[in-house]
Image 1: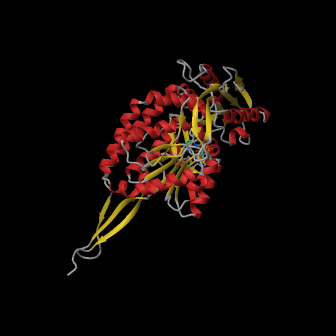
Image 2: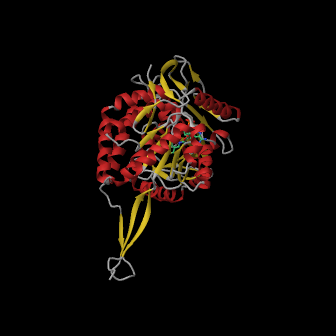
Image 3: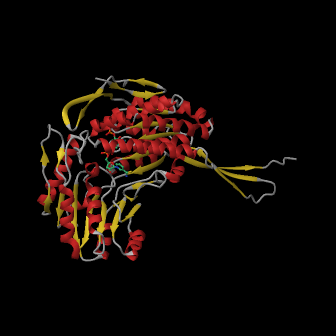
Length: 482
Ligand code: TAP
């Protein structure tokens, strides 16, 4: 059984404590798939020191050449996509087609940011002083700590690491514990692509142990985090108190609005996709659906038709359309929410139970109807294959209810009315709006992230990443000294 280690200063190293974590397949919880190092604060400090040491050389390298290394990493990631995707499926249960898609998306993100090495680094401004050149240039921030979750174990780390590196920063990366083996394989891609030692460092182990040092160490300039709201707020406090730049991508409770003039077949298919893809474990998953009264019953029928087609099972098997949830912890949380839905009086339209397949963490795709705004399943992020449908009088009620949440990640409206689509686009209080599309989905060139409690700091991906991973330096040059 293989051991997966930290990657610090160009070397694979065990945890200073000697502690290891054994990883099990959520589809067959007795199947062990490997061990990862469980690191300590001392290991995180060594990684920060290595990143600090590597920073001047990396910053001095031309951004074109830094981009060239990203391109090599993209090629290697593509070559190894099957192995890395299979590892991710074994670690957290997502179907192989989904993890493979994620690996290929990682390669696209690397290619996108490789090109960034060729783009402008700043601008020349007019100066009020004669003969003076005034420059505003973008420079790296320094050492970046990246703390990532288990649910997108390949793409989320890459959409932080790739822009951080191409803009000249060095990185210490702490992935979600559940997906440490996948993380080690992703780090190996960067190693084999030829990145200089210390430029990317990986520390495996508990966020509760290493999170504070990564958010407070004097040599860390910025912290980029994706994960839960509770941990995000903790990081924000520490980063603020210690003068660090920070970026948080947090939870969601994403609404879809279905209006009477919508294509109901399309809406039902995309609502079910939005809710059940990746077993509902997406920050952008569709979780609340507001349906205009006149089409509520027809829409419910169409949703059930779609949900019935879902085949639950081991994500490595062909033909399976929904895998297990990632862990026993997820299983307990999600089944707890389903029980609350039943207890609080929502109408159980489909599913609601668990499935015993090889002892895996399987939950039926679950649809609740006639849910009300005060129910727990309508208010809290579930992060599982559960969706709540609600009947509303009209578009205005739907919009008001959709916005009445602390979250603001993504939202969808299904309608053929240009007027209502535009109104929703302007008035939906989220970072990402879909018109006749599912709430999930992202492209590397477009900004990604939420508003309200779903996100803080500059957005990720696309050109938006420049804001977080660089800082402006204003330079005044007066060449005439005589
Ligand atoms: P968390 O429990 O918050 O874990 C995320 C990361 O934070 C993990 O690496 C975790 O390490 C680490 N962590 C735990 N305690 C920490 C601490 N005290 N200080 C610093 N880091 C700490 O979230 P999760 O359950 O893995 O992920 C699910 C959540 O992420 C959901 O709320 C979901 O909506 C959100 N999410 C958001 C997005 C975007 S882009 N908005 C995308 C994906 C997921 P350990 O694994 O070692 O605990």
